[in-house]
Length: 99
Image (cartoon, rainbow, N blue to C red; front, side, top):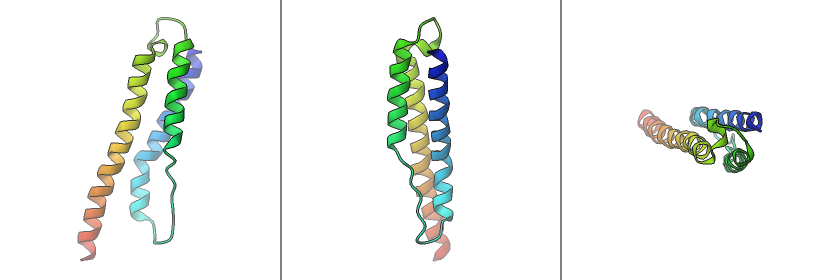
């Protein structure tokens, strides 16, 4: 079960890396192009990793749902905070550059 927790954490981290790179792609995109960031995937992975950590045995930190939930939640919050900050600063910079 601990291996499944690690796999789910890696999937969640990969989605958070996608969220970190997404604002840069959005700032570079041309009008009419779209990119979907699918926030429900983080919540699904977050729930799965915490539920799986309940069933994981042992003394590892992956067997403690509070710790796993905090680490996974911090990943998600950081990625969305970065997304918002980059979009605000990047949007401000682009608007200043056009005028």
